[in-house]
Image (cartoon, rainbow, N blue to C red; front, top):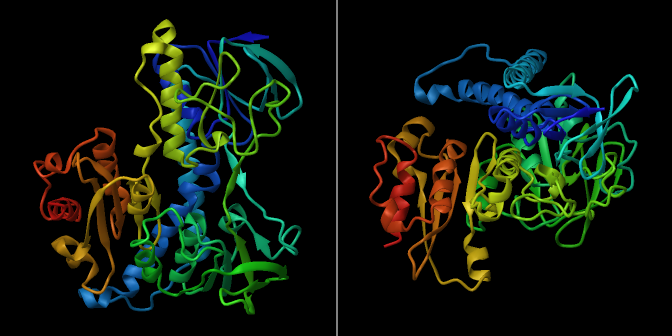
Length: 460
């Protein structure tokens, strides 16, 4: 039996960041990971997806470069080489995490962790050896898994894959049907369409990425060239690689493909680590936590996707920091102001065209009874955006502010560099800045980010 200051179950972007922060504080930490360090994000999610998307962008930019004075003859892409580069990136980043944990004195063990109650965790090694460890603080970070809905013909069908399976394809399909128009579905649809695959997206809702602002979702959808969308359509069954669905107008239709991607979301991993047996409050929606990531069990915190709150890698990392702050503050924790603020967590859709947002959409603000003022601008107000994308490429920024207080409530972007700009907008929300405050900030020129400043001026 080993004794530690903190035991962490799960080595994803929540777990390994928590371990790093505790390592900096010179705490004795045991990090248990049953698969591979980095979790879903690094190994079968964020990083491999973005690596392939970048390869597709390079190919697309070269293919369209003639209008910018760049001609590429005999242009082609090589899928096996793209896959090899993806694996190299993942392996090197995974090694980097392991090196950091070692440098900070974190003990990393391969194996599954099982919560036995407050202060006790069972560790089962891959070879089957079982040990019980104790610590006054335990962090649960078991992540999430793809949802496989109860659609007839979905389970056990070799022609139906989830995002993990799609990332490992040995060869490109000629036709791909994506079930689900959320973030995962949209990103993969854009990737495969850019490489010449015929892509059809079947989405039950009336618009893609349902949490986007209603003005901006259509801009993103129309920017995804080569993708056919069947909105308001409900999948009834799958036969082989043929998706049968009921279209918006009520007629029966089908999508013929070589492969079907099931991209209808993810669910918290609540089984396999003794949650319910230990008495953890863990309904199907996720482990219940407070604003400091504490669970109902004394000395047990939960972070990341397992909570069912804001299923994003960077959200998990921030939850980790909040939990670690609570653990380190000891008796002062009641006065700690370091709490989780979900309204300041940005989201991003990575793809051939990016989208990002933080804070409230106009629809959410109005739904809360707030009196708001809004401004929307095309990114064509940015000279850099036009120079790098041309004048036909869509892009927009939208800002929502409280009419009485002038406080910025939400910022939403569609277009190049959206993922790199949104952190600044998140800072505006986090610090509760007013539009008048933002007008005094200096934005470098020429940048795409200047469009945010221009939109804020339009609020006046």
